[in-house]
Amino acid sequence: MVRASLGVNPWSVLYEELESYTSLSFGTISAVLGVLVLLLWIPLEQKPTLGTIANIVVLAYSSDLGLLLIPQHLGLPARAGLLVGGVLLNGLSVAVYVGARFGPGPRDGLMTGASAVTGRSIRMVRTVIEVAVLAVGGLLGGSVGVGTVLYALAVGPVTQFFLPRFAYRSTPTHPLPHGRTPRADGRRCGGQTGTGRPAGSPLRGQQVGAACRPDTGGCEDCRHE
Image 1 (cartoon, rainbow, N blue to C red):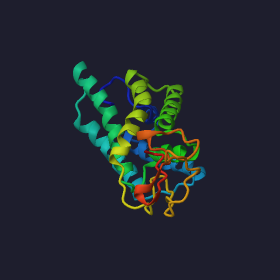
Image 2: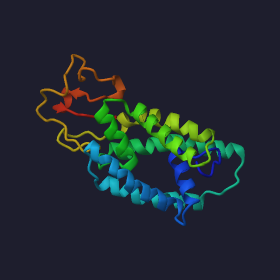
Image 3: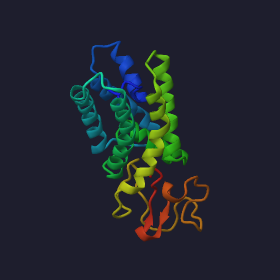
Image 4: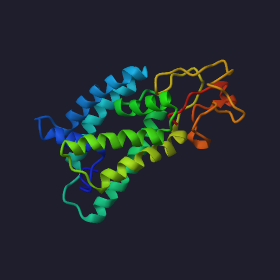
């Protein structure tokens, strides 16, 4: 999305603006802010895991590598393709690695944790986070384009669409991405309704909000899906 030059994602707006104030690279700033975002996990009662550390390290190096390999000054069709592909692939990549249940990265953990605590969908929580980061980056003087707005509004729905399709399910004793362990007794999950979901849950169908699934032998708090 950086090379598309049609507006980067909201977090990148913030990274690029901070890059202009420091001697750190884009990827290094991404890693540093990733560590700082972990502080927001404390009230959400989340704990870093292997996936969290891997996300910080891999994202930092892959960001710098991508900027090195992808040429600048491309034509408009190529830039539009990079923009749309960047949004779709980002949502897909979040679904794949979060669904693997090795733990989310700092930013995605903020998303799954807030979703679990508030009972709101991944789509809504992710959109609110992206818009908030976009506002901060814009206030600092960052460059906001059509791609920035597209990403902020689309990545949440894309992520929620793919998550149920890539979420790993084995037994209900495995820790979930937001750090909580699902119940194994199969008795109650929130206030279970006849539809197999907790009373008051805003999620239905493929949104898979805190659903009680008899076929898994218990309740899986999979609101992140």
